[in-house]
Length: 451
Image (cartoon, rainbow, N blue to C red; front, side):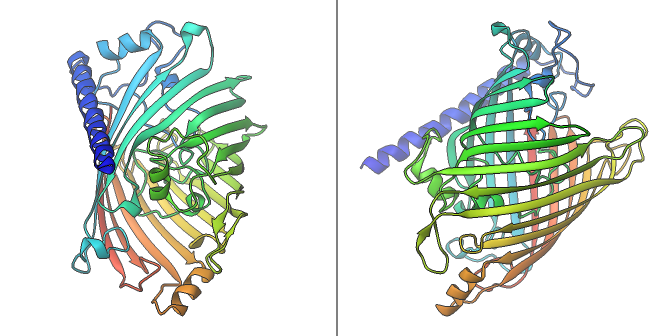
């Protein structure tokens, strides 16, 4: 009886969020001008020293599209009224579909990887930001974000209706020192896993899950975290964070134990320490874009030893990534062109089913001059599986893949301002650790609207 009441409350909550989103969207459209917001981002109409982009996601290694990328015009009454108070409201709607094209779909209860049975996901998140100008603070941002996430296969999610971000950002010394403190989803903050660096054009098929196995917070889940970024000389930087670990049993368990995302320290979840050093230089008329980063993370939370079944601490991972602009064809938009990137990651095979990951990526921003917001990519990866896990599974009579590999081609198409369609095709050798299922050719597509 109690479980039914809880489920009813959660269902009503989801409906409330969606209804609120539709109301906000309706209000926004009623105040927006008809002209699409495709111009460059203007400064605040009330204070020339402030930009509306100060209210976007800042201090992260993955960027959100600018506010000009939205069906709502930058000069609309809606945007101006909020900006005049130093606040912004932004939403994202996204739907995803994936399906293996080589075999008939298996029954839903027999699915072992995304696409083996037709896979669908839907999400919406709404973000409120304020620059706190009323408090006469400079280079400061209050960030609040809530999310609803639904997936047809929970291991690929998880399903959630909760907070995703609640933190305060503050920059010092001309932004050479940046601090974030609060509830933070760190998948956008560190490492730079998204191909091309943007949430709008991130490639399909990438499977670098090692940081999340070790406990780094990722969408749609959040944990308390303190993040520090120091900008050093000659385009160098250091980034460090102290984060409460996600549940070592994975995302679905984390959500079951922490439905709202607000629990500060669920029993057993301890500290994840993370450090990253890098060199980043954006493209200019004379310099090609380049970004190198490397780091290490260590988790003191007790995790299950895959060989013995005992609870032990000490899970860890290390990573190195690099992206370099090979070709810069546009004399005005210096960031356009062809890029080559690579990734190498290792994780502790005692605890993590995926213990190594190697990726090579080739991608082009603005493959056609007439399509400056599009991106095409070709991504190949190899992932190693923990011998402790696969040996244990084989000893119990189960079939296993000892590793997996994939090649993915994808194209991100900007349909209209703020609207993006991603289409990808992935050939996957060894799509699941167990059982040893046949190779897959996964078609995937997503559609995103940034408001």
